[in-house]
Length: 291
Ligand code: HBI
Ligand code: FE
Image 1 (cartoon, rainbow, N blue to C red):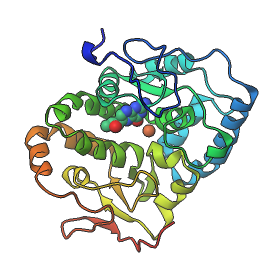
Image 2: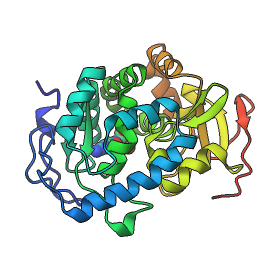
Image 3: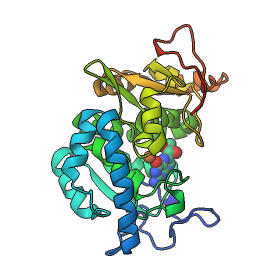
Image 4: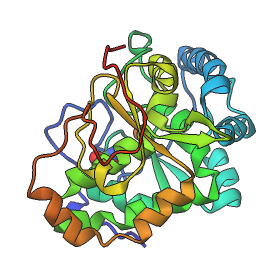
């Protein structure tokens, strides 16, 4: 069943990640613990409450509706039960992993319509920012969009494209697409810009910043433009790319021959994170004044 190459079915040894990578299946999945400490559920509730209030105003309506349908306001959800609902909606599942997994493993899961989610929750000290994805980022941030049939298909398509990026030594280029369009994407809904990316929607500060602040650029989505643009991993983005629809994202991916594009992009310097180009469809030119 697994499409993960045998050579990669090994746990990393020296890494600075907090998850337990010793006791996992060949596909890097682990069971979700049957119980969490009351403090863990309390932290989930605190994050959930803080974030739903924001999401109502700034997120795409489909995100808000799916989140509500997930009924997970009160506790860290049971992933198997959530998965069952998701499977009925779009055929996707959520599986637990110890944390970050290697690119090829990540791509293989997506290609088979499995979203890898960390099962553990951050510490209270990390309320606003953490480096590795935790269950709040993965479930609150990513899972609602997987109830959207077009976005769900797109994410599978993204995963299927992984091996070609690996073969062209271009994972960093493909990862920019994930970063800007899955983690930090904006979309126009009824003439208004809304957030749908998991990165901003699981972040207290960046949800509003991405939609409202005069600081960042907001530029119409173009696939090659995105794949050529550097991003920040440790601060709010300088540029957000704006979709007309998830169909637009899907279409761009289907119509593109990624092999030659990777080879071309690799030949030149990427654009700066705050660049504005003459060819851009500029929706808002950012002041770049910061958060
Ligand atoms: N692993 N658990 C997890 N979550 C991610 O979002 C993730 C990952 N491994 C690799 C990865 N993302 C990205 O580098 C790829 O999209 C390129
Ligand atoms: Fe994420």
